[in-house]
Amino acid sequence: MTKCGFVTVVGAPNAGKSTLINGLVGRKVTIVSPKVQTTRHRILGVALEEDTQIVLVDTPGIFSTPKRRLEKAMVHSAWDSLSDADGIMLIVDVSQRSFEETEKILSKLELYKKKAVLVLNKIDLIPKEKLLELAQNFSRDSIDQIFMISALKGDGIKDIKTYWATRLPEGPWLFPKDQLSDLSERLLAAEITREEIFFRLHEELPYAIWVETESWEEFKNGSVKIRQIIYVQRESQRPIVLGHGGTQIKAIGAASRRQLTAILQRPVHLFLQVKVKANWMDNPRLYASVGLDFKSGGA
Image 1 (tube, rainbow, N blue to C red):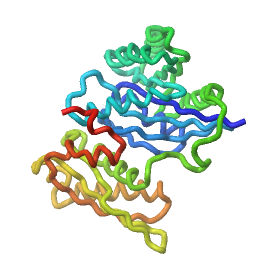
Image 2: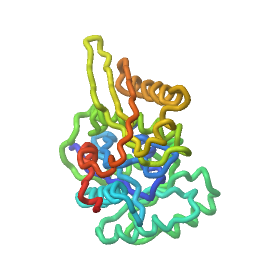
Image 3: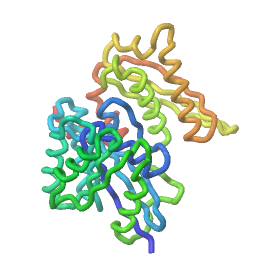
Image 4: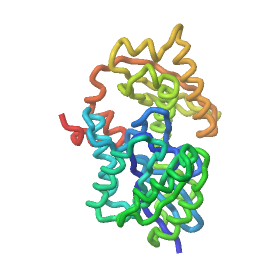
């Protein structure tokens, strides 16, 4: 008998949710970055463990005081994903100095009256004594199980998959065996380029950036031509993305193309353009394109 269920992955910003999901799925389905709040919308990753299909819901990092419309919509999306979940995983970066945001998440999770699995991540960065102390401090009635892992190194990933294979309900699989995500190729391509921008410009460029796949043209030889627009909010940000003589955007494009070629397993021709759009953060169409509720962001 097959099993299938939704497991929502939540946590404070930069806890390692996306890295963990990529590890569980076995392939990149969601982007990672040194910057917090990289994930902007819910992404489904599909992991398999024997006869069980584990549908992982990657959510934006939850923080207690979202200010901008985009931040509010992201946090609303994260909490909204818990309503129909069969299981919840709370990821904690144990190398952090403060766990205030995690404590607030734990308190709010109790309102949903569901058991959560606590995943202590980045355990290789702290002494064992401190790790055991943290595990004891986070232990409470709402925590069903505690795992200690290093998502980046892959340590402990198998134990988590085995756990959910024994906990999820019986039922038919919701996705074909070879489908690893619900993310469309167009959106995945935009996310990969945004990831490369964050990696290269995480010091210079703020979060006021959006990447949109404008066109996708497939050819008989199997290759694909992708045109993308990188939106920034101010004219002064445009030269940062372009770089001197266009060197920066060429490097971003080359790195993104390499990733996409490997993921899509076909030749990719990628063309990038930078546009200034001061009010992109107030554009309902862009929110809808990634499944965010524009109205939940407020005014």
